[in-house]
Amino acid sequence: MTHVPESIDTGIWRWTARHPEWHPGEFGAEVASFALAADGVTLLVDPLLPGGTADAETIDALDGIVDGDVAIVVSVPYHTRSAEPLAERYGGTIYGHAAVRKRLSSSERLWPVDADSTDLPAGVRFFAVGKPRRHEMPIWLPSHKALVFGDTLVEADGKLHVWDNRPDFVREKLNPTLEPLVELGAERVLVTHGEPILEGGAQALADALRRGPFWHRG
Image (tube, rainbow, N blue to C red; front, side, top):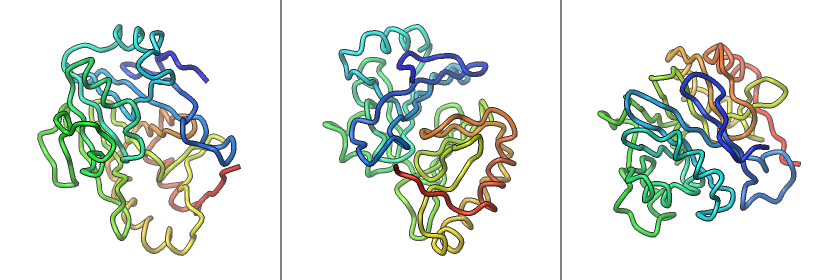
């Protein structure tokens, strides 16, 4: 676990922290955040400051990465985390599902999005998944051909997995809404639980959908 952002690919940094609300066991307890340099915009993905606003080491590292406008993208409201203090520090805007608003002290910096939202920074797109639709929205980052998943997909043992304990639901209600994302041709898949997939992302996603769901919280 490293709370200082480290370069994992060209224009992509990753850091991890202990989930402040996680208790069931070790799997899922460590969560990842990302920063990406994208077309004159710095994207912060599900950012968590492990030491809060007093976390000088992480903040100092981010200060050295941030360049230009800042857009904070939140994959699922539960991952709003440190989005608000970082938006205030960098004069940035938070993009995410409208339910993110409930986790902010002020909604002034929130730009609520849905699957029809266009003209977002660096060409970012959010996708609706699940039937009924989940609040979690996978995020496409075209600048790096990267897909972001909050909780729907995780990495374990070098593979992507759909994270759920309901096989029938996954097969009938979830996977059909994830299958179109394979066509994006992602090179990378950035997950907040587990290691990122940095090559062959579309194939890794397709394999995960064929593999069936994975469940582990201990």
